[in-house]
Image 1: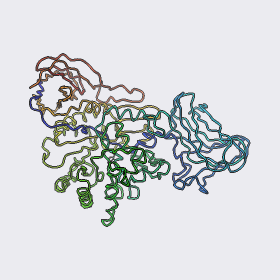
Image 2: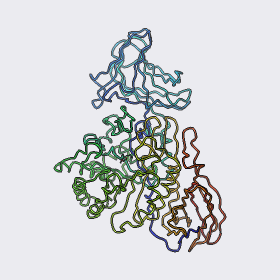
Image 3: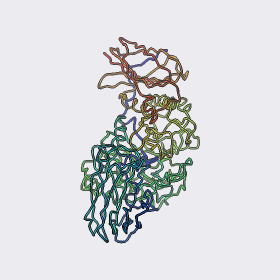
Image 4: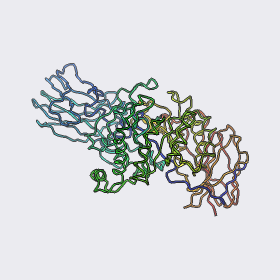
Length: 627
Ligand code: AHR
């Protein structure tokens, strides 16, 4: 086989945004995940105020524990806990965290709590106990105030434990009111107090993503409109952000998550900051006046749609507006006077039907008048493979939307067979955001799907097609991004986490290999055996280094040899990065996180051809230094 690369006939430019990330608070992605708060239901504000908390009452303790809302510390979260001890033994409560509280030996954890003592002179003991009951750390708070006060302390556990609990115990006789019990690692991303989990953000940064789409997904829409994502409420001071049920808090795939709520500790300001930190262009998706069409499909009446449009316009001002403007001023007050450089926005997620077109038209008109440079992204419903949604394309094209968002969750063959999907797309119409996709090892929407090598190679083959068509495909992202191994609703996912560590899947490495070898110009590629479906390839040039980069996907079971013929360039040196595994079902796990990882090798190269050995079941990135 020969793969001919036409370096003499450079094609389309590849945008910096091409390979991005899709983030949604699904699978405990935000609360219990990226947002590093370790205490669940820290303000007792869940509908069942003791969710996450249990009473600790040793046999000799005499005490009462009640939820109150009389003269609260905070009007937004009025519930607090009253602990009354009549002595005998320490008495109190414990928080279970998000499927446990993960702590590391010797690391520092910031404890914050609000309290007041309304009778007696008790002390408060705060302790971390490990899963097996071992005391990991404790502190005593004495001389408690009679009026609400915020107290802070640092906990340093003596041992590592993935499933510790935080105990709040009354020592002595008396009554203590408690609210906002919060515990954060000091080791957050960039050391920001109350910030994001460092290892999870690092995994994102390592992809060098071109964009970050947030906050979803279905949570943008909500099951009903009053549960849609309220971006404005998420930029209030952190502890004044309201609590909202998560769209994934229902029995999906027989995996109920009755304790899944959104605290919005990770809100829109933090999303924009995250984008800035990891060099990703921000891509917010906004509700378009429609609730999730898989749920109620509730519609905002057209005479109320202006409110939704205004939310979207205000978001541009929040991200980009001068500090003198209302919403730009709010951004500045939060600590970021410089704009966040928002250039695009998605209007609705997985929406379809005439109701969508009607609402989208109003958004387009308002944006074209006020922010003509913002690129607007429209949805095509849930599945591009589904004929039902094809009718939307001509309508969206006629409306003049800039980019159309297509999604696909399908078995691996769909991705192999669709590697040429975009070859015949209209070059004059809207561009494509392939905004959610993942190969499903068993079937779409099944709890048995695994992030195996076959799925990763299927996605890689498909991505060669996205890359070759960079003139029409503007951006693409795998979905979903994160999953907590004990609290997920959807599988497969790009990165799996527990309370202490994470696992990068083969699919993660595929995304990373494309993104970190993005190049900036497509080079036409011709396979001598094109169309036999056994090998997939694409090539790019990276202008700053002059390198030619070829991606080759070979899902077959035998070693193959391929010659890369270079037209218009001469090779002086080459190297490969290969992702492969011992069988197609292999995947990474917490027990074996490195079963499938990229491996580097040098390749002999000179002149106009480079010979490459293709490992069985592999993706190969060949980087050629040219004269
Ligand atoms: O990625 C999981 C879900 O799949 C998203 O929330 C939704 O947009 C899609 O249906």
